[in-house]
Image (cartoon, rainbow, N blue to C red):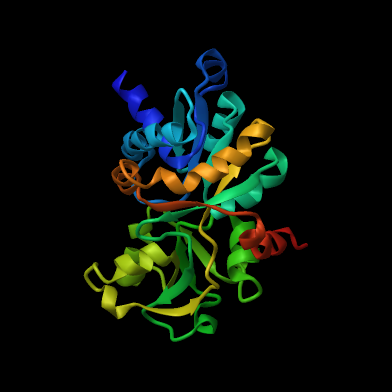
Length: 276
């Protein structure tokens, strides 16, 4: 019961329905997917905070409840979508771009994340002074699983992953430590990682040799399964989720603010990702 209450809190805070399909049909709860790829920490650690947030999401929308599912892997998120049929979601940019067509995703808002992450990308090095110096060398990164996203949206003509000998890492800090130690001559990191760099021994010896354009915040989306007459009210309610009693739940879930939006801030990324 305690877990269920926390789940409802997250849904209310996100303004996102999160229940499993059959459960939602049974008592009106809404299922919400939260996909934050390449984030530090585990899904199990984050889930209780998402549960708490969903309480405020449900309350803001006048739902009987909301159930949120937090994932860090796209494959797990897709399985969740197939089984739980979520109506709304908060997604990493790469995941949104890859799934938008198949799942008929409509942008209805934006989520500002505390500490950043995924808003801008950097190539870093201790041994080289510019991007050209890194090409043909080893490049450590935990962002390399989505080659299309990196090549077309992040690199956007400046580089592709094939320009380097990629060393795949599984944790954000592991990427940084490989560059600091010299095990990798360069690294591809995001804004959260480059901020963390200064806190690591030897981090001040590493510098950025290239940086991407600034990306839009994580999109909040309505899935094709969302009821047409519910999308507008959900969008309107987003701005109230992190106010008042919801402020603490949002902060605990790593969210600074939720706000309404349309597709326009994502048009450039969509165009780049879709280019042949």
